[in-house]
Image 1: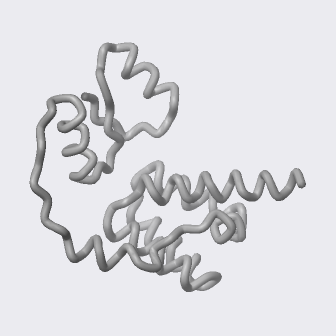
Image 2 (image 1 turned 90 degrees about the vertical axis):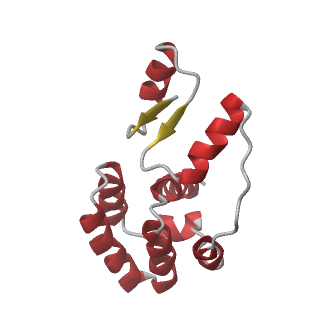
Length: 137
């Protein structure tokens, strides 16, 4: 299993072509590693519910329409900060988002605090798709 910071599909294809059975993107969450071990080795684990995760789940939804409503330049800056794992810049950008949409800023902040950058990136992409679909209609 490869551990990578890449988010590009081509890199995934190259990794798999090199003989890997799977890959995990950085920054990874521990549960992703455990799920991978279960898939490939048949390992099983006993989990204890984390209070931090259960407290962050309510209200942490990232809706595509909220992401799409952000100015295009701000979305691009967020994507760049995520891609470069620039946490200082990401924090500043989330503060800017909070000024425009406090609920969205709080949700982004919750995910960033949990190092859930994959979800943040996916939300940005969903917002891009949402705005593209709305522009075509």
